[in-house]
Image (cartoon, rainbow, N blue to C red; front, side, top):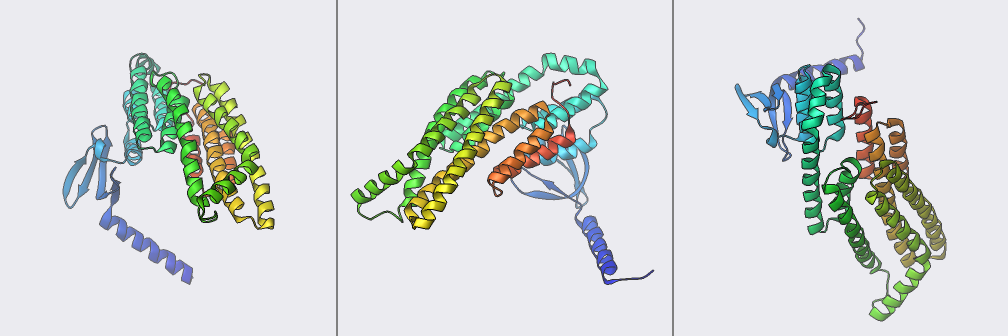
Length: 347
């Protein structure tokens, strides 16, 4: 056998990896960001059992990171309809909707009668409970003036739990959130413009008004797109809401192109204050455009239209490759496509 530098390096890395795995075992992730090192020996509805330093420890579900716990439990869930439904309930209660659908589908394949009884007696209560929990989180976000978080949570209710009692309150909450978000964006704009505007307050106000007049036509288009998104969130028909969201997102895309043209023109004329104004408006338009596409994507994921959902993810990343929201959605699509199943939905 002929040894090369690369062969030796690969073997060395493999030995190091093996020693590390033996010494430290698994890393059990907790919901507070900490972890426990040891060997996972069991995972079920009671929690995760870990062997560490010669001792066996049971880590309860409320201590564990939900995604990690689901993954470990899923590896060990027995081929029994009721067992898969118990895992589905946990996933659903922690807003892991696509994972819940996966477990539901597996249970359906194993015992349709058990699933039928589950649909009739358990699912309605679970959905109401999850919706109420999410609504409470959205209301806390509103109280703390975290408008983006409030909209994201309320939108999850309206796109995935639209037939619950909490959905009506979420529809009302969304309208208030949009109004307050506009106000917050305006305050941010004033701060960003401060370094370019005159120190004299009266002159600064006049210049800001002049800048506002130049962008007034685009800001009217943004207002129209916002109203369209609100309309989509308040629509009870998923098919209709998806079309409304798509229309709003496409309108935002046209707005972003208009702003790019204005920015290029202002750069050529050396208008730094105007460019700062344009940058701020464009940041808002990009964020809201991605949020509109997220709403479209959520409906597609619920329906299992993974190819269309992937196209939406690519469209969002084309708008802003650095958007954490877009990247998180892209990962959700990949995970969902691998599962390819539905919670309470027959194909």
